[in-house]
Length: 376
Image (cartoon, rainbow, N blue to C red; front, side, top):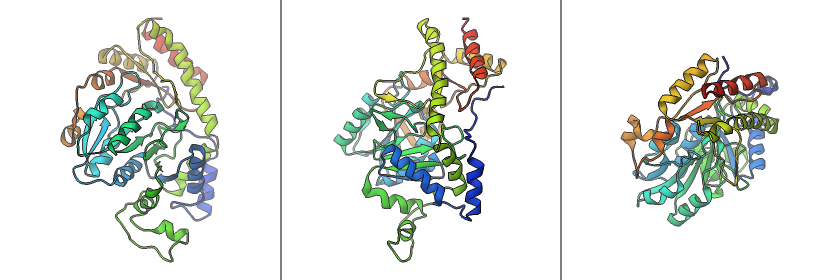
């Protein structure tokens, strides 16, 4: 069976984890945590980047940093993972879902303004498949209504919008380094702080509500509990694993793009014949080959497709039952306007295997299996 995902491994992970153990520093903010944070800050020209225990906890921090008041609202797409919504529910927000664009599966920027009320505090965008939302329009709306913008860039590390790294455009950005992501530490993530006035608040929030970061910088002679917070600091062992991949980040990115481009070249003729739909990459967006998906005719065809691929030894998956239709979505939010594309497009989409160092033989098997299903 060709796996849907294989966690990335560069070859130096074990060596670096051993180094962390030998320094007797395996809790967070050791040498590898610092190396990773500096790498992201310099590579993405970010104000401040803090590693976290997960992409979910990065979103939790972002929601709490948005100066929320009980009953405030957040506008977000329904087509996303539960973590995007959970972060704001835990912060006391009311969820307001809006429709997506069928071309990118991202939030439809033209539907946001209509959903704004006097309780709206945040617009949370999700860069699906590492392809950017239409950020110029979204940031203009946010500026006009004085709203925070949180970027869920869990899938967007190494992707850009008009030259800017995803996660660095809004007020706060969130990355994931789960084992299914392009760069992994098993479980882990990072929050990008793009407004300098929130850096200290973020550090306190991440360090269990203490000013420990200031203490380590020598700015105070002892640290103490100063505000609410939690334990969002990942293990140094996880950071050591991630650092091995950041050292060869370009190689991983190019390798995944090679697979993505092979898929795309193979399936564009099927799209031209009206048999399936391939991904759309808007002008100004550079993606990171986080995933390659196709869209079948409908949910029935998708079910048959997945079974066909499984018989051929290829694991394919679909995801995201729209949140506004889920029990928690009905409880904590509402859908603004018409669900024109969210549900119907989610029922068509299926993801093909995509991971670092996929063999040419496996890639060929996948492509031939797809073509066989569509009779070519």
